Image (tube, rainbow, N blue to C red; front, side):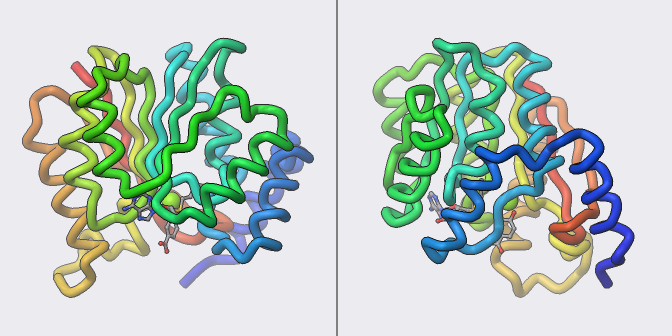
Length: 221
Ligand code: SAH
Ligand code: DHB
Ligand code: MG
């Protein structure tokens, strides 16, 4: 199903735009050496996240699903020197690897990694009256996307952008079979978004070195 042209074009774009930056490649190498799965965004998608943040001059970014900190690094690279990136990660090993990776890459001072289940951490941020985030990247367990959306809406302001990864999953989102809880999770999320007048939203399919998937892009009214 995957087309070799998708990979070729990703490599072409990576080379053309010098997206394989040494700090970022080192994060991938160290994550792989530490046994983390290679389910990070692709380099050109990482740059897209950076550009989403730059376009709105984001100062505060929230990420759900850190893994080894690869997408975190791209988002952090968009921030001013006094910017803040809060990233939520369930797996303590992933937290430790990401901490080391981001410190070594020179962006550690911008990044707070909060260990624990994403929904619990979001509830705590709300409880503690966290200042709102300009950009939110949802990229953790797909089963919880709808719940993350509900909670994240308490942590944003008018004009904030919310991006959710992996909402297409090889086209499964539009197929009838309802037996994959991750696909059901994405559908519940998209249905909640569609019914919510506080956001204007789209979903875009993507192909590339990471296969066939897509992201949702929301702007808070
Ligand atoms: N954003 C990363 C990839 C994240 S992979 C990148 O592109 O580089 C998804 C991550 O979500 C994994 O590290 C996984 O441990 C984490 N995760 C899974 N369930 C979670 C939960 N309930 N709360 C927080 N993080 C969770
Ligand atoms: C998976 C998770 C991701 O966030 C991703 O980008 C690709 C795959 C997964 O859980 O398989
Ligand atoms: Mg993802």
